Image 1 (cartoon, rainbow, N blue to C red):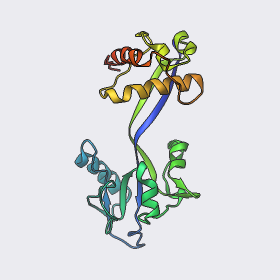
Image 2 (image 1 turned 120 degrees about the vertical axis):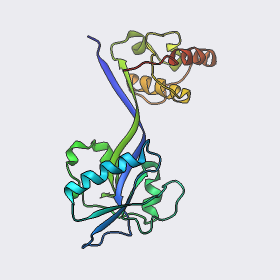
Image 3 (image 1 turned 30 degrees about the vertical axis):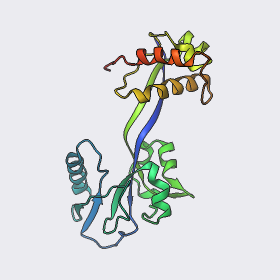
Image 4 (image 1 turned 90 degrees about the vertical axis):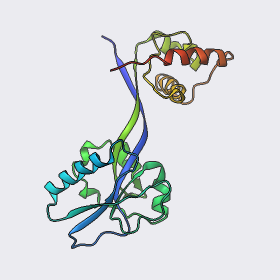
Length: 211
């Protein structure tokens, strides 16, 4: 039976966190803003609101709009959802407050590295939510992969490189991650025939696979 190893890159990680403008003890409404680039924002909001109504029926959720990439401070919004790459800017700007780790429900179900990514100076600044990611699945016992020392050593290995990717710009990243994971080192290099061989690899990676 084929052994498979997994390596993944989270493209978009969101943190759900109270802002510096909320936090009243006795409230009957809570204003929140989800990430504006969700595939179906309205459907996502319905899920949040239905679940919230089960847990906190006496506090009504009010929808708001806020874009972490271009909007200023989220004034008047109690809870925001933002891209993890904006974490330091948002914290340094004082736009959010840390939360009590004990208040995170079922925290044992969250990947430890995700919680670490939401922690700054031993203070938790949000609850991580994975929205999308690239995951690479490969045969850990593949001889060609084990013997490769450069990215382009795999040129012509159509049976080794089959990746489902609609975006060609991601394909080189997948190769690098697969080799780095197998070799146990970062940033594997290319050989002298890099340009021609990378074109070969690109053609193989154009194959679409439905899992």
